[in-house]
Image (cartoon, rainbow, N blue to C red; front, top):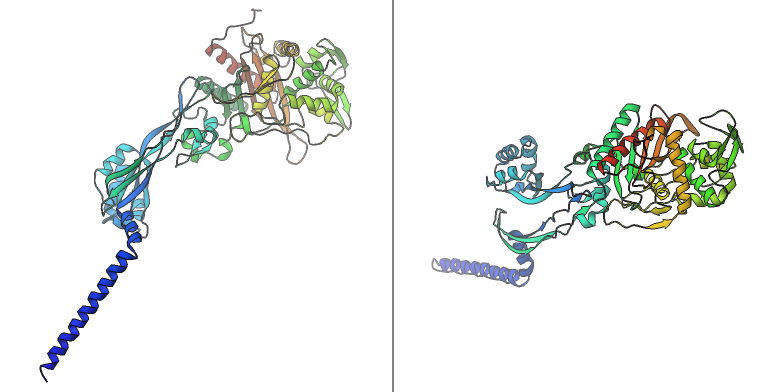
Length: 548
């Protein structure tokens, strides 16, 4: 009896071992036969990792090669909190090295529910490398590029900015993103159980983005911005913009907006300040639009520069009485004097000769009501009247009831300056250029001569530049009132000029939004004069006027 009990126990133990062996064998067969591939992928994932290698972003240069937007080497520091043995010590070390708040870092590093957290994006490489040398388990490092704008505020509205991932978010940075961004590479690395890289087993190199050269001149741009800043402060204005372009090529040499901002600090800048008003905002041009009516009347053969009219100081147009801004008695004026003296009544008289259809056609020929095609995102096409009332023939020719962008107006005057050819404006040196004839060379010469008289003895004397003949036109327009009609206290003052008038090299437009003094000749013309005088000297353009 006593011998049978030990034998039974031995057989039971053998049976248990046999079952355990069979279970282990079955598990091994299942793992190796059924789960082999998924487990192999899991193991590879634990020890191998494929990471993206960011491509260096191309630089943005001005026409002379001055760097406006560049990339600088940076290192991003990240962490796996599950691998950090002492979160507080790691937070203190990282905080000291990277100049960050250790208390904020501790909260991230102590949260083991996350397998990945950023410690610092695009940190200073020297500080990040010093932290890396400490060998703290759980911290990782990879190279990135930080976008810098070396000129600070200069051309910030044109350049725009990029996000933390180096993708363009605004301005030319987003418009040229496909060219500037390049193509990211890939690296497959082998890691140890602590996540530290041991070796690179496969690599696809990144393709660097291409740099882009602009038509802007950094010096002219900085000067234009400085002039606008002084004008805004002097006249207590809300905003201002300026466009300087070459009428022969359509190249924009400067495009300034005030108030300005530093593109390096774009997150701190209100959206309203960031937009490029020269391209995206519209305004009623006032008297600067009168050249279109005069150009149309001359081109249609309805008048000559010496055709004269007897003009009363006021005119009834349908249900509206329109008056002169600068005279209060009846005068006889030639077409040339109508433009040089900025006569509202004279311009309306010419518009009535043209009629609705031809006037609308001439506005379209000069490019109003549609985009110029400038290589900048968010361009506004402007606004032409959607319907005509009886008084539209009286308000439209003098620049009311129509909205244009500063760049549209500058390009229209460039067509007057270069012999009658409309040239598509551009900001990039290799940007597209379209041209079309708007008026004849003869009409172009006639209009230029009339606009010289505007500056010599008309409403634009404040735009005169010593030694040069300046052709231009002033403009003053009341802003629409949100409650209806027009404001009696808020105006846009503008001046558009061409210099030298004999051989035009520059078109300069200036708009001042809500200055304390309303007249364009008093507010915008002096700002034009400052910008034009500096540009003529800087570009060494010879004088064309005899001393008087």
